[in-house]
Length: 195
Image (tube, rainbow, N blue to C red; front, side):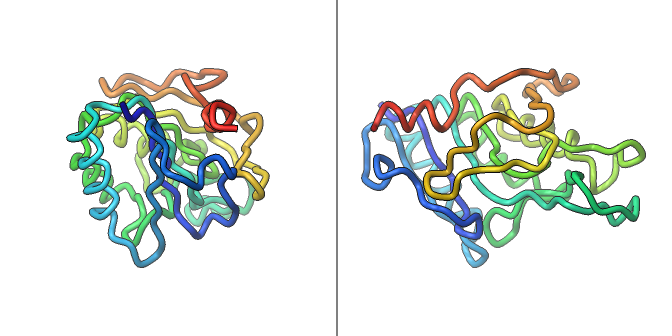
């Protein structure tokens, strides 16, 4: 049974742990870049679903559009504008594309800078990360976990360590996000299984 998927965009520099470099029965790695249409990743996820059934967790490893707020005119630990994943990226006006994998995974853990960030005054704008992550949860029918601050990681093995800022849990029912200390499984937990 396949349990985990890593969806990694190559613009996030680093290498996966050696244990992740080969095919494993319960771990699958899908890679995107600036020229890869998201539909390719969705096709791979749907193929895995047809073969193995609903999977436990999809880990997304990519850059979040963060570091400045054009709307507020500031630079800093802000974000919420989207994810640099695939050719289309993940934005407020295209997050509905993710309906193509609706019901295929239970959880989505987003390792990206300030993915769920919403600064005061940015509610219901293109810089509302809580809205974006909530929409991702609704469109995929999965529980989404994403943090509101810039994330740091060890590029030699994609170990993100402790979450910076507040990690939120977004329900597929559309209720307000709930602060949590950790997702049901971390990427490093899966890595330790294969070490």
